[in-house]
Length: 82
Image 1 (cartoon, rainbow, N blue to C red):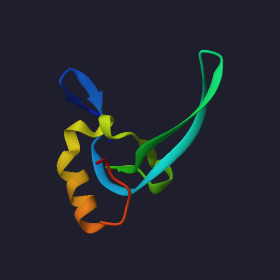
Image 2: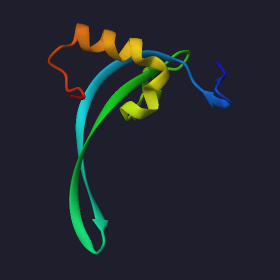
Image 3: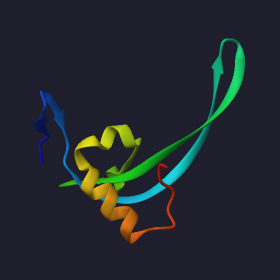
């Protein structure tokens, strides 16, 4: 499987969204350690094995809004934006 061209960028096709999760992490900002939380989705890529699933933030899924909406309809208790 090869990536497709979307708006001049190469992108892999999302087969399905496996789950969503709020991921917590810390970063040093202006000399202070700050805690952050970010919504991420576990993505299954078309033509790839489950071992190759990765976590992506919502802004990386702009071209798959229908899959995100379908995922949340089928999994209403999973974390989501808003």
